[in-house]
Amino acid sequence: MSLEGKVALVTGAARRVGRTISLALAAKGTRVAVHYRTSVADARRVAAAVKTLSGADADVFRADLGDPAAPAKLADAVSRRFGRIDILINSASLYEKAPFGDAAPEDWDRHMAVNARAPFFLAQACAPWLRRSGEGVVINIADWAGLRPYADYGPYCASKAALLCVNKALAKALAPTVRVNAILPGPVLAPEAMSEGDKRKMSEATLLKRLGSPEAVARACVFLAESADYTTGAELTVDGGRLIA
Image 1 (cartoon, helix red, strand yellow):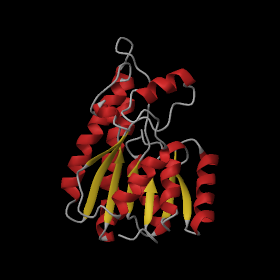
Image 2 (cartoon, helix red, strand yellow; image 1 turned 90 degrees about the vertical axis):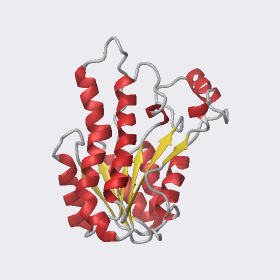
Image 3 (cartoon, one colour; image 1 turned 180 degrees about the vertical axis):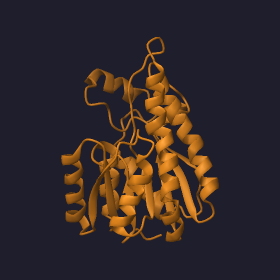
Image 4 (spheres, rainbow, N blue to C red; image 1 turned 180 degrees about the horizontal axis):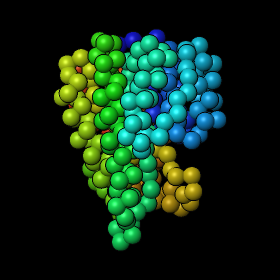
């Protein structure tokens, strides 16, 4: 489908991968609802960049997706502002270290709330608009570690595994008028505090022997939204082969 003039709600859009996805959609003429939780200045810069890039409309929306009431309020605010929602990108994510011996129920609940519960109920809240679009799209940003968890991040990995189940459940619930797919990034953006040595180790662990980029994830989003018109319930890895290495 053509993305020009469509409205995309991108969660976690103020920084990092969410920002890059927003700008990639804007380059196609998509209007962008820029969701953020605390990074208001960054969110406003993204909205300004969208307008500069293509002249497409953009606005910022604050929501704490750990709050059960937030998805419905966010969808309502976006639909009132733009009059439609055609694309939902669930990119917001909580990523915290929680070693097995130290992990607490609160760690589990926080990750599940933001990474799995919020995408489900945000899709539910956006569903009337997505169906009305006639070409509605949901893209869930998961993680290769949802299939192959790594040490010390159990609650995070479990929440991303749950998101993969949510992805399939939404694909069934929203068919045939809305397509739902997931992207499983690998090492596309190293944590800001990671040392160069650890970055090299992370790179060597991939089949392609290099780190990816947020742009690789953004291109996958554009592909799934624009071109993959016979694809739903799928999981697209963007990981340099890390999952099978």
